[in-house]
Every structure is written in C-alpha cells, then in structure tokens.
Image 1 (cartoon, rainbow, N blue to C red):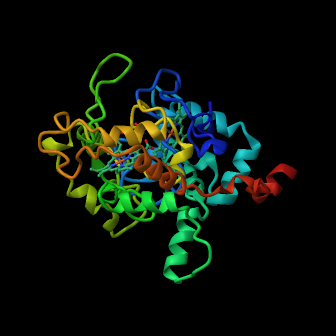
Image 2 (cartoon, rainbow, N blue to C red):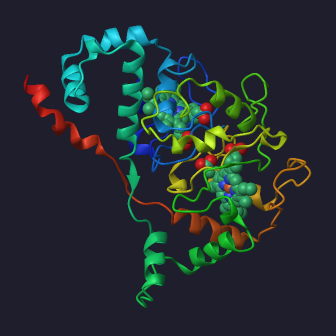
Image 3 (spheres, protein in one colour):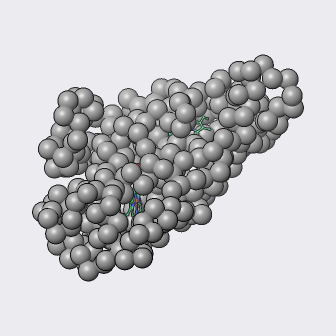
Length: 320
Ligand code: HEC
Ligand code: HEC
C-alpha cells in the first residue's frame, strides 16, 4: 500500500470514495493534499501541528498502513535505490540513524514532497487579477459565477470560515454534519479529541524534533485549550479544486457539490451546536442562486502540479 493509493495524483490527491479502506475501514474521508504546506493544523480534528508529524501517522496507524518502525527500516535497508536517494537528500546513511530518528526524517521527506503539490491559477484567480489591474477584457468568470462570488462573500457569509488563499481559515467549525460514524455508530468528537491527541503526540512541535530552535512555530500548540465547543467541530476544508474532491465532509456523507449547496441552503438551525456557529443560518436559495454558487465553486479549480516527475533527480542512483 502506498500513500498514493488513497491520495491519488490524478484525483486531486484524494480518492473519490466516501470512506476508503486501509487495512481496516476508515471512518473519515481522505483529505486532498493539494496546497497542503503551511497549514496550522492537519487532520479533520487537527490531530497534528506539522505536515511531517501528520505524515508519520498513516505508516503506523492500524487502520491505514500499519507497519512498525523496525520493519520499515529493515525493508528500506534492502532497497539500494532508496538508500542512495536517501543519502543524496539527507547526507545521512540509513544504518547510522536510530529507528526513531529515521522515522522522523522519513516524515520530513514526505512533507517536503507534499509541499510541492500546488494548484496553478484558476478562473477565479484570473478574474481577481483582472479586477486588480482594472482590466476591461472579457471577464474570466461567467456572470453566473460572479453572482456566486457575491453570495460567497456576502449573504452566504462563507468567507467567514473559507477565507484566505486556500479558502480556509485553517481552524475548525461545526456546520451540523452528524458526528456519529457510519461504521459502528461510535462518536467522532472531532477537534475535541484532536486537541487531546495532539497534546499526547511525542512528535508535536513542542517536542525535541522541531527543527526551529526558537520554537516560535509551537506557540499555537502551547496555548491550546480544550473547550466544550470543540466537541463535534471539524477542520474547515480548503475549497481549492473543490469540484474535483467529491464526496464531501469529514465523513464523506455528502455526495455532490449541488448537495453541499442544498445542505447550506436548508441548514437545520436546531441541530447546530448550542454555543456553536452563530454565523450560519439557512439561506433558502432559489435554484438560480444555487447554480450561481455551483458555478463560483467550480471556478476555483486550477491545474494540479507536483514534483512527481522529478525521478531524474536521483538518476545517479538508477545507474549505480
Ligand atoms: C488508507 C488510505 C490512506 C493512506 C494509505 C494514506 N492516507 Fe493520508 N489520509 C487518509 C485519510 C482518511 C485522511 C483524513 C484523516 C483524518 O483526518 O483523521 C488523511 C489525511 C492525510 C493528511 C492531512 C491532510 C489535511 O488536510 O489535514 C496528510 C498530510 C496525509 N494524509 C498524508 C499521507 C501520507 C504522506 C501517506 C503515506 C505515508 C498517507 N497519507 C497515506 C487516508 C490515507
Ligand atoms: C462556520 C464556518 C463555516 C461557514 C460560515 C461555511 N463553512 Fe463550509 N465548511 C465548514 C466546515 C467546518 C466544513 C467541514 C464540516 C465537516 O466535515 O463536518 C465545511 C465544508 C464545506 C464544503 C465541503 C468541502 C469538502 O472538501 O468536504 C464546502 C463545498 C463548503 N463548506 C462550502 C461552503 C459555502 C458555499 C459556504 C457559504 C454558504 C460555507 N461553506 C460556509 C465551515 C464553514
């Protein structure tokens, strides 16, 4: 099993399945890895505070790849190409590293690759550039998508949570998606459990493997508090290339983008967390407004690029 079995490069680095199986059935939808660098938290509940520690988890998790450090290291020590590429990248030899130091390095290598997974300009970005330059040529967005954008930043209040270059504030919210899991009706406590896991994680940024000697990047983790409102909150997902990442939500419970728009339009206010999202309210959009919103969301897709093609970097290792 590889990371790419679930994070498929030709599917915006996710899998298009509501709940995939690793060695066991997962209870969360596979996240897309596009533009994944530089987020404050990782995982639907923010179980990790760095891309490298999040990348270690699937290798060890019983539900995902379920290996252990010794087996992993012993297997890779048999692989001449990997050894050579590892040496060229890290200036270290596998054999010289302790099992733990090896695992951390592997996490950091996986993270540096994932940081190369980026999207190019979308029609929305081109439209924004046109506005900035007061460019009067044909708008990159259709009239319908422009109306959708107005709803997004206006009446819909979507931008309150889906803000910034990745259309996420990087934090957590409860928009009323059920938190019972499909598999066994246990409860996914979301951010509440996420904070507790993060605190216990020996590889969080407060630990000794954080490369930043000032530890400034650990301040967020240091000041985290578990609040009652975190119960049932999930990560605000990025909306970049969202038209390519169905099905939606932490549990993959909403099949299409049109269904997500219906969900927001007919939101169940009673269901929303008691002290939760006061910003959200049912919008009761007309069919036309729903189409506008769908056209806007679809305009957020750009070409997905990554360094996958760079096998040539280690050509010397193939020749040896
Ligand atoms: C069996 C399927 C599966 C495999 C294999 C897998 N992942 Fe994932 N990945 C997921 C799921 C499901 C999530 C969401 C998990 C959660 O939030 O608890 C996820 C989340 C992530 C995230 C967090 C994304 C975010 O937006 O916070 C990263 C990063 C990631 N995976 C990287 C990897 C890497 C690197 C590998 C290989 C070492 C890997 N994954 C292997 C299914 C998989
Ligand atoms: C209060 C914060 C908040 C507001 C406001 C908000 N969202 Fe969300 N959005 C979220 C959260 C949190 C999720 C994930 C919920 C889950 O999985 O349980 C989400 C999920 C989504 C998804 C699914 C993405 C995916 O990859 O699964 C789409 C699409 C979306 N929102 C669009 C919108 C639109 C359109 C609006 C405005 C009408 C909006 N959101 C307003 C917080 C918010």
